Length: 496
Image 1 (cartoon, rainbow, N blue to C red):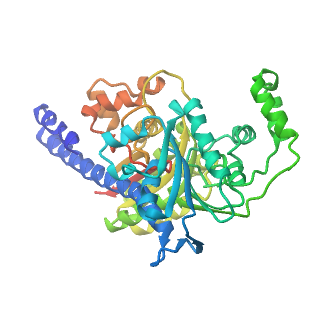
Image 2 (tube, rainbow, N blue to C red):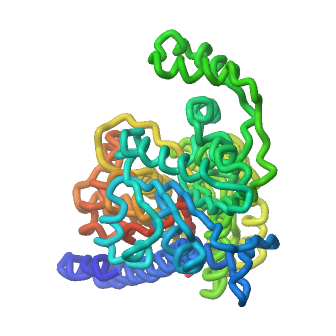
Image 3 (cartoon, rainbow, N blue to C red):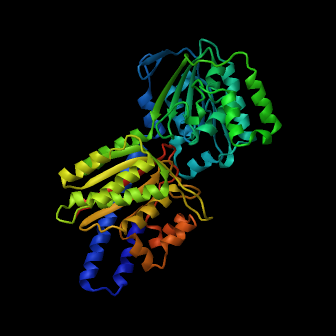
């Protein structure tokens, strides 16, 4: 907010006509107010899925400390509770779990991304760190999200702990790993891993297993999140080989991979079940959006969640949001010329192309037609960016920049519009920003500073663009949040 207000002195020095000066300052002040509200809503969404609140909603101990309650299930505690976990947010989840469970926890092993502890320390998030003398052993690995020896050591330690459990034991599994967006890749991962595709649940048998899952996958499919380590796989090695043959990759496989697949193919035990497992989604984009919606309503907005499953090409998604803002304007300001039938049809065609499940587009348009007040449209998911340049950025900053470019195409009239896109993990691509926000004035602001939006987009260089624009005032900085439930999109529409 302070950085954003640094542009005011620059405007004061500009040789503007008094009426233009007052109008520019009024619009800037309005944008700043909207930006602050947007940030507030984004932070509320993230806050709803932080490890501490999530764990306390999902777990509780009875007053005597002899039973662990998970939703509507009770589990006996008698020095028999163990913990394993893996993923970006698992460090904070494990810290919250150990704080809650105390001496009931016998031993734990977690696998987290390389450098995550140092990142949390730099961010001052002590609540995300395990206490000294913790019973949970931490392995850092998988640098740049690629398998390495450290990740293998972590997997072996988790497997060893699970295989040593008995029927009297209870294993708490914490999951916050990214799932594959390509189902075929997920199938291959399961075939090659001893822990994915229900492998961890099988290793822990006959112990009871409770899996607490933070979803970073559209639709929250438990069999896809982290390749389903506690969910029985519906695929076999033949499915994997069929995929490899389809892409002509089978002959090029390393000998080690061929050996793993041949052993899996001859496994006499066949598929296993996971009847001893309770899988629970404790955090998701749906929960984050619901909290942001409540906060928007408290601020006086009519708030509608469009979808928690936004996916597809970032260009098409930006066109959808830009045209949605234009069509929404005609509902909110009836004195202005309405959207044409063609524009309404185009909006619905874009929505159909994106194939967004359960898109509440009609509800949103009806809300604006009848309400006539300020509106906040919320959505979540993960768009896809086709890389064609070597710039710096992430899908949130690229989406925001593209939406800003789209907003200039449509006359929005007497209505303030702001769009924000942010990653709930606090890191958008290889940058320190979580995302960015834009208004319809973005194009003119960029032109005034000699920034060509098309050139930055051509090089996928959205972060550099936003760093240059008004001293980085449009960037969303949160630091590492310690959670991860995909992205949050906020579209504000406020009649003047």
